[in-house]
Image (tube, rainbow, N blue to C red; front, side):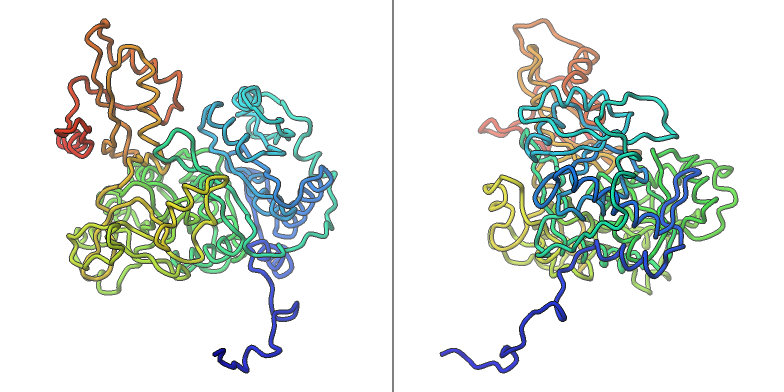
Length: 544
């Protein structure tokens, strides 16, 4: 029998009471409310929110005139410059999907991504023109239209595009009549993540999730209106953890940084009174290790979000001593970046530095607008006890979880098995309910905030004819958090090779940041059935 519910009678969604959630609405409001406040600073370049909004509409209009619309993919190969910020609004305004490419990747990986996503247009910085030329030559599908993004602060590099960004922008209509998506479930971005297989997976995120993730970031970081934010985090990484949209919502100021350089970072913090930034442990370590002379004149509190490989506790301790306030967050590309944070409890202020750092370095608890994040036994799908000892897998459920993997229904079904998103990260839950990662179910190495698939490195090493077997594991590194290390067995019937020989071989097949930092020659540790015991190799490596 159907129960009569008077609250459902004649009370339907309509244009007056329902609008799809999208972070694109943030910039329109801020441009109207705070038109003259600074939006973007890049060296001597300055823009207001009214100007940034107009520029985004012009780029969207110009793309629309090229035929770009719903469901098309538009990629970027850009550093943290104003055009990269504008892309986070301009591209989705057309209904297209933003694909921010990792500027550190090689041509082979990039060609796969452009083919897989059926990219129609790509914005290219001259610094990366050469690798994009190689990429286009490797593509199996029709190559995209290339738009060069000239940077007055980087005059070198080639121009390979059919258009130049500023001229392209100028051709667009500043009054372009864009609309929010008809459905908030529509894709807003596509980001590729390294897995344990050769080809990366394309993570599809939606407007609703980006909207809610942005709001959660503000709450987790306790960001006030008009905060000044330094772009140390790559904008290509999980769409800058959704912070492009965060800054539009709070009418903050984006201070762009072409590359991470500790001297420049500290100069920018001092000059612009930066109050917030994000980054992998390496970014914070650079600041902590900088000479006192570089930090001179920075007398205000600077807040940072730290994520990536579980950072050394010493990073938190050193940053606290110099007056930087770090909050540990955790997430994946599949969760729009951070979806777990480690909020500080008031009583922690009375603890010793060592005890306070120990608590602050945990992954923590679910974000404010994430429905649930739990540690479950992957076999029973039951929560593990809060005893700080029982290991389970971190699993997510809620609006801040991807739509799925593009053109990969098998991987999508596996990731959402049992009604939860399986992170692949193994953790315990402490008695206070805070999560602490202990290991990874998949052998992904997180180096400087970037995911590196161990299998990809193993496959590259095995291309050398002298190699019999190989196992790549994470080695702890004070600077990068983790770096790859390779255990290698050589074939007995071929003359032995040196570490330099193998490193040169790997350099031909892998991006530089994926290259092993150590090679150990010898017999691999195996089980009785012949399976390599990677955990034993990790222990051996990190004890030495």
